[in-house]
Length: 306
Image 1 (cartoon, one colour):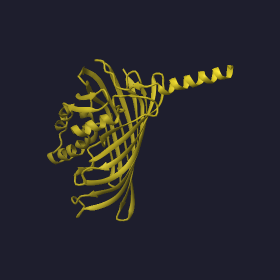
Image 2: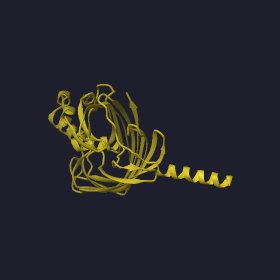
Image 3: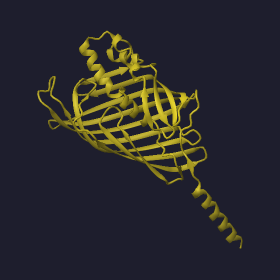
Image 4: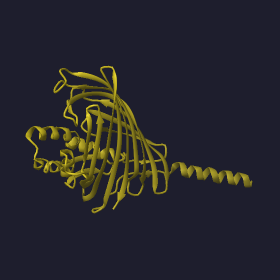
């Protein structure tokens, strides 16, 4: 009889644990502030006329998000880039832009001009970014850098890949776990669709999964699929060259989140893209050149609540 009672007790306890569920969503209070630090390393292997050409791009960025006001569906966040650094190493050269670097390069001065400029993120409680406001403020210091018109045009084209409204939406969303607004238990899944960071015409379809729930902390994972939505879109690279892209691929995401606020504690994304880049004729290229390309990216985010 004692064994039977213990067995029944364990069965009841297991039943209670298995039905525990929670509604994951972001909570916003005016004045709350988060500082998000991003570190990305991207390796690219391209075949140029049959020869393998490696490239490495590293990016670090610090962004402040402060709850400015509440909306019917979420909040309006006051956003600022606090620091930016990007280093691109390819066969075309080594290009570094650093907001904390010396003023002896246009790239450093451009990143300095972008930091501390306020724009606004309109976000829902599920983590979906509805809109970006005042993004033109990020450009106000560029014209004061003293560049000639051609140099300024190339810089604007290059920076525009990640400073235009759509790219900013994608970049902020990538740092946010997406929720579907329903109560979930460990093992439950939901789906989302977003765009590739920067202004690449690539769509990401994610299947999310609540893997564990332990008091005030939950572990969320996602499996994502990349598809190219516009193979004719022309992009401008940091070196001023123009290209079209055609990629497919996969990504894996893992994040620990605070169940009380919905905000991530840490987040890791690993992605791999396969396809081709078509470099368009111009400059030293007399004609278009197709380059089979593999891109592998690892990104981590950390979150500091102020």
